[in-house]
Image 1 (cartoon, rainbow, N blue to C red):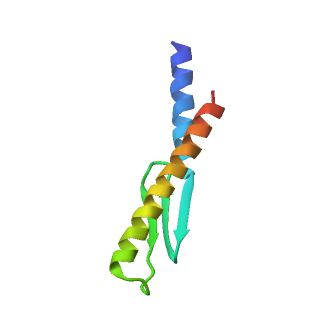
Image 2: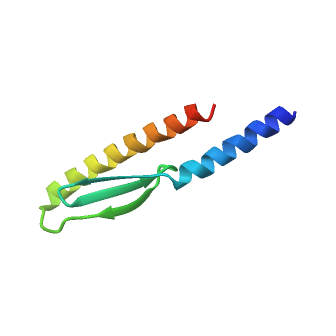
Image 3: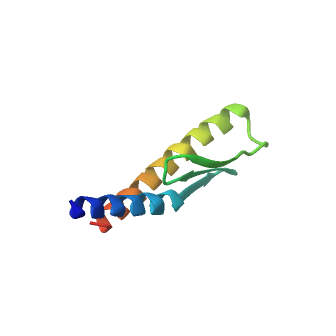
Length: 81
């Protein structure tokens, strides 16, 4: 019973630590920041780019940021064991 409570406490601590992690990807003046909860925290656009190019670049930055934060989360998870 106490072992389960200890595991739950550890998971909550890890969740809290992950929520503070952020990954920012910048490309061609556009940047996207994602946190460890997989939430977009910030998007910066480049008004000098065409709308189509901005859309494509935001999508690429978002996907890269998500992959980066997922890798960081997995590393923290395995380090915590």
